[in-house]
Image (tube, rainbow, N blue to C red; front, side, top):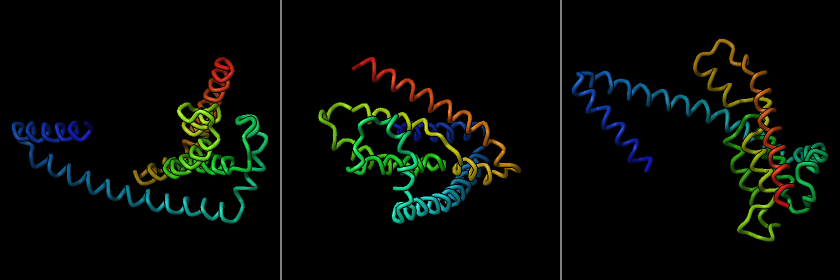
Length: 192
């Protein structure tokens, strides 16, 4: 469906530009936009490779296990009764860490791995557990300490001060996670 929409938009733009006499300008804008998209993709790819590699090294060296123990009181509050033996806790911590660093693209495969591990403990496979719902809320809202993707985009776009957005990002991400956790806890208690 989306392909049909995009095709219609591009076709309509070219037909309109033909009648308006701006076909050359539209063609130049298309090629310029494609070039900028490739440049942006390459700059984001470098940042993603670096942070994903760093997370992999952290997992291999045992740093994530230490981080899991550090976050244990919070994890026990958010995911009461979650077994640490099945690896779901580590996968959740890795996903949260990726989100803390602003790596939403890197957090996606980590989040999928965490959901697979949570699904193994699910007694009713066709219904999400409270742990799964809470994880989705935390992963979607996500507190971001270092919004690396956004900072890279701002830097690539030529921002003089790409870090000036940090405090509003912290406030907004904290409020979104807090309200999501309160809602998930409230609905969990109500439906039990």
